[in-house]
Each structure stands twice: as structure tokens, then as C-alpha cells.
View (cartoon, each protein chain N blue to C red):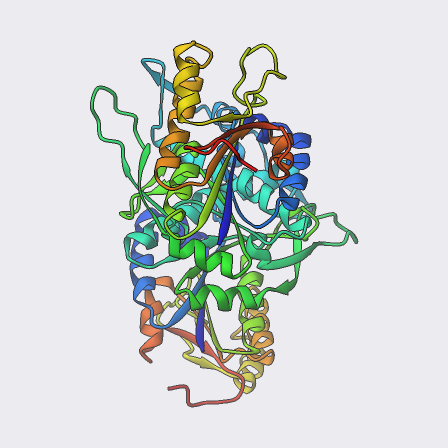
Length: 266
Length: 266
């Protein structure tokens, strides 16, 4: 079957009106789909109210026990259930999940090398049978950034990694497309001009753009991740703004589509 | 099929060791089962840390917007996901849910008469097809006390009512037993003596015990609820301590079993 995996981040979640607008678009997105979300600034705000301050080591965020409790409450409780309730109002039969629910995503606590990241999970396995069972029941999974180690420990996990892991695991049996919504209109030729979107990137174009220094810094890991997903069997990866998501399914210019080899997308 | 619905409250949830011990017992409980939980004092504690004080009107707790956010975070986030992760460690494939997830429980905001209870839900409908689908997939639902109105609003709902509604709705197609774990060993002849358990109550015995004032005050609504569930087709209702739950399935004296007519339980 054809499955779309759509990831949204703080730039949608943190603004109730933008979230409502996005969910309306999402409800019209055709075919089987899975929504993946992180937490945005809401977790930090609640953490601070509770006196749980973000702990940083060498500029990296550490998930201690209290921070894990806060992100579990905010991601798996508040944000996830508000999204599910809003989708239900749009007649989309969504079901909210962490990686612990139905053993959806098993991860391991990141091994300590130079830095102890605390209760952070690196993904090991996705229960694709569960997804198949839910989709067969016309349920739409809304997956948040909490996973578990199958030994009773919840773990804070990168939401982009969750979207990629779901996509690559499901790609073994399904035709999977992966959509990353972020704060830019796509990969841009001029990062100050939102109209300078590069509509299509494949491996050859990517190498060329890196050489010419059009693609640099923060965009490189994003694209490396995209190509890794393609290597593992994902059909195509899209990067763009949440509000342009539906255009992406209609073959209209709306963001950057990343493919392995093909030049002709539509 | 045979389904057991087991409800636990604050006297288990609030004590990590008691919760672990209970979940071990629960994992051995035979047959299809659903766990229902409330929140205990954890929600009040987090609420107070966030400066959200429990609002009371005429001795009744009011769920305002901030309180709803807190209970959603604590019930659906922290407690529910910790229980699910612990059950996964016990090789029980649990899936945590609010009433919004998969449209499991639709409720309506309690109408304002003398008191405006705020965002409190009165249950209207249970999606038994969803439960059937999950049980068929060998998933064990862990249901918390948040429901929704299918118009996008989450609602705080009594966990006992959720357990009863699940039981009576599923009783149409299944053989359902309902277990309420609370802080007493059962219905007691002498409320100060935990060994004075009345092992079996039916309608005749109940009327007799009320007349003799053996059953009074807080126990009457509990038993009225139990008889209502029996009237609606539930097989039997059990009331007792969480640690004695497994004895209940073995026909050993462990709490009070409530049945409509039959004297011979086992």
C-alpha cells in the first residue's frame, strides 16, 4: 500500500492557529498517512514552570529524569492528545502513540562516550506489523517523540529520526513517501529568498550544489538524512512548509522533493 | 470472547513499588483484559508546582482550562506511558489510550445546572469495534480518564465511570467481568476489620445489608454502580485490593463479588 509519513515541528505546534490550519490540510491529504510530531517550545515552558531547567553540556541538551517526565507529559500527553482530539473533530480517526504503545518503536539509551545525554533513545526497531494492523482498521497513527527500551524505560527521541525510521521500516513492504515540514519553503538557492526554491534534488544535483556551496551548514544533515532514507527504499522525501503540504501531492511547486535518481517526478 | 476490565486508582498509582507489584500480577491475569486508571495525587502535585490550584465549588472539584491541561499531561502522558512501558517490559503488548484515541469514548461536557464543573465529560458512547480490533491484534488497552466530545474538546472523566461504560458496552457481544481495585479488602461487615469481607452480594443480600445498616455511606454509590453494570449485562463485578486481584480469578476469598441473582459463583 501507499503510505505518507508527515513530520511537523515546533513552528507549527507552537501556534494554535497554524496547527488548526495544518490539521485541516492534513485531514485532506490523500491515502494512508502517519503524523509524527515533536514538542517545540512548550516542553521548555512547562519545564521552567516546574523548576526543571534545560541542562546543557557543550551546547547539547541533556535529558535528565525530570526533563524526561516533562517531555513525556507534554509530547505524549498535552500535544499528542490535543492533536488527536482536533483530528477526531475533522472526522479523521487518529490514534496517538509513543514508541512504547504496542511496542511501536524500540530504542536503546544512547551509550555514554564523551557526553552522557541521559534518557535519550537511539532507535533500534519499528513494529511495522502494528502499523499494518492499525491502518487496516482505518486508524491514523499520530506518533510523538517518546520511545522505550522494552525494559520499562521511556526515552526521549529525535522526531526527525522517528519519521525516518518509520519510513524506512515500512518501505520494505509499502510504497512510502516522507514529508518534513520545517520553517523554510524548501531547499533555497538564496536562503534569504523564500521564492528561490530548488524543486528537485537528486544525488548528482546534490553533489553539484554542495560543491558550489549553495547547500551548506544546517541543510547538509537534513539532506544526508533524506538520501539515507532513499537508499533504504523510501520513494521520495519532501522538505517544505506545512501550509504547502497539500500542493506537494498535486505536483505543484511547493517545496523541495528529493529523489535518488529520477529527474522526472510527476 | 471473555474480557476482564480492571480499574486501579491512586492507592496503587501513587506508590511506584505497589504499582510495579500490581503490574506483575496484572500481567499474569488470564485472558483478554483492559486496564483503566485515574490519576491519584500526582495531578494535584504537578498542578500545584505549576501554580494551578484545585478549584472547589461546594466541595466539588472544578476542571478549568489549566486543570484540564494538567490532568491531560499527567494521566495521558506521564502515568499512562509509564504503565505501558512497564507492561512492555513484562512482555505484555499494551497500548495506552484516552477516549479521543481511535474515538474510543465520546462524552459530552457536563451541562451546567447548579454547578459548572468545567471541562468534565459525561460518557455517551464507547467504540467497541475499536476494542475488538485491538484485542484481535493481541493488544492490551490501557485506558486513562480523559475523553473527548468529537468536536475537538478533551474532557476530564471519572475513571470508575469509564470502567463501567467499557464493561457495559462490551457486554453486548462478550462475557465481561469488571474489577474495581480500591483501598479496602472488599465490602466489610465491620469497616475497621479488613478480615470481615462479605464474599458475595446479590440483590437480596444487598437490600438486607442496607436495611441492617451494614452497608452505608460511601459504599452505597459503589454498589449501586455495580448493580447497574450487572443490569446492563456485565457478568460479575468484583471489589477488593489490587494485591488480591489474582486470587479473585482462582475462586479464593479475596474481596467482594457482586452478582445479580446467583448464589453459587464458582
